[in-house]
Length: 75
Image (cartoon, rainbow, N blue to C red; front, side, top):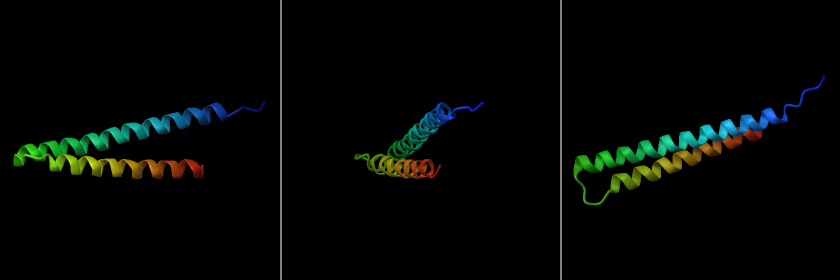
């Protein structure tokens, strides 16, 4: 009897993209928190650390998405 692995592949993709979303949340949130911490520590009027580190987190998250999509296309 032949089994269809198509639903299993779809579930696997959902799990992979869910983990990517959680990674993005952790990276962007972590860098943003670090930026807020540094802005409070140095008592800056403009939240420059928060802005710079949040954008850095976004770029890292986009890189992680690019790598994950590249790995999915390989499979």
